[in-house]
Amino acid sequence: MDRHKAIILAVAVLAGGTVGVRPAAAQTFQNYHCADGTNFIVGFYDYDKRAFVQIDGASLPLKKRVTLSGARYSGAGITLKIGKAGTTMQHLKRPVTACALVERT
Image 1 (cartoon, rainbow, N blue to C red):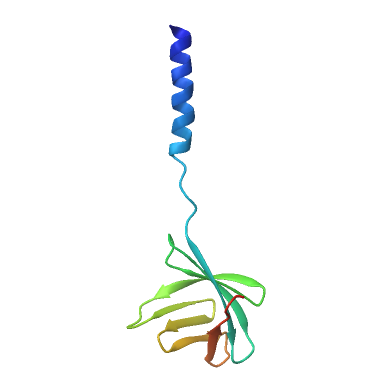
Image 2 (image 1 turned 30 degrees about the horizontal axis):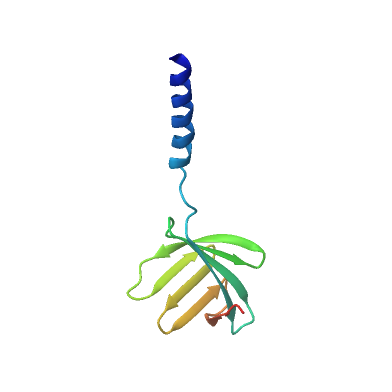
């Protein structure tokens, strides 16, 4: 009888280990090219409100800010605005520049 209980316990532990596995979080990466020649990548994750920007060889998280329409993210001298009218970025002390999403082929 002890052997039978051990087998049932082993099966229950193995089955329980696969039940607790969560699927990978959804993520979106977008490539942008700006009018001033700046290129950057933005990553969005479902579980996080921040935007993760890779620009000039550095990865920076940008906090989501309050806005009336669209989305605005800023931090570390970078402001990224994504709206119906288009996307703009202000990087460090450079002027605000228009950016376009680069379509992947």
